Image (cartoon, rainbow, N blue to C red; front, side, top):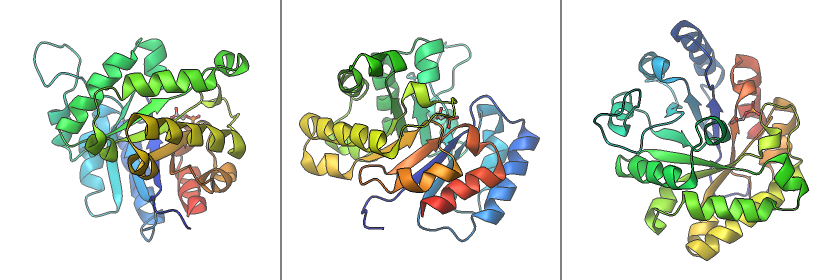
Length: 254
Ligand code: PGA
């Protein structure tokens, strides 16, 4: 591979997996991916499984991510989880602003920017999600939407912090629908994102930025998507819930 940016393949398990099911899956992944060094593999279980999964992957090359966190460092925020609590389980990554949270929890770009700042302060790598809806794409508004999300969700980040952050381009119409963006569509969006980052930060920062693709990534389309020059990894939902498909996605991406 001639990309200097190492691929990150992350599994977003969403609201799935009891502790027993989560352990079953990571034990299998440890076996299957023991020799994989070329990509960073991250699993993002629900909060309730972080402790056990963290212990289970200690002696492996699999890393741990969370699916969300609070923008606050602690206090009277019932039901919320602070960065410092994630750190207790050696969590290194945190997904922020997933389209499901933007839609169901009404998360705004400003909130996501505050969460990203809190994550970076705690030395967690935020995986910040952006992406247009089908309606927006059909209206020809994809770039405008992506630029607005980038400027809003990254508003709190300086250049050094951007080096630690990861972006995930997840077209909403491709999430959980089985209908992935084509390699050309993904590459065009990623190239646009990188150009926008160059304007917001600078060329070298944009060149080094990691931009994952998410939305119906499967073993059959991973190779083609990951081969695109501006695609630096994947955020996998449904297909990360099952040992065979997630490990095949990782292997096919190398
Ligand atoms: P999907 O989900 O792979 O099931 O489409 C991707 C995501 O929501 O991160």
